[in-house]
Image (cartoon, rainbow, N blue to C red; front, side, top):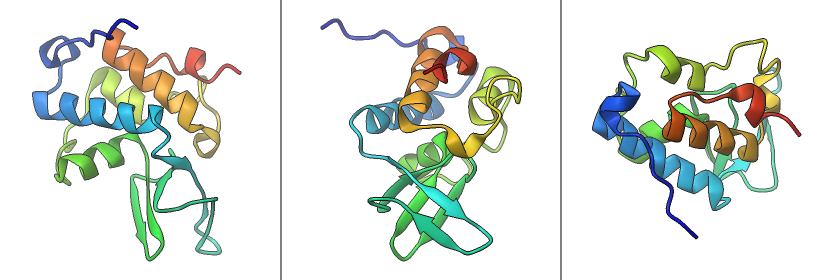
Length: 136
């Protein structure tokens, strides 16, 4: 299998530490280390098979006794150990973290596989292409 080639940080318009963290998150998503987790703020309830490392695009980072739930950007900050990693988010990186409503109508329903496709697309083309990533 050929190794993927990701765009440089400069080509993506982001810093190297941001790029490195996003690549780590992509690998976590692809290896199944993050589990899609449903969280209800109303009932403060977590629903998942395993919640040690939960994934949900509606939450940046939410820590609980039984684990942590975060989105792509939240997990990148966690793996980089830098809560200010994405203080400034521009262009397509903003679209990666906040998909346009015409491409993703329900952030909570974004699966690990769909997020992996969008993040991979962002790192290889500079565009997350959520509409393609979320097609069944």
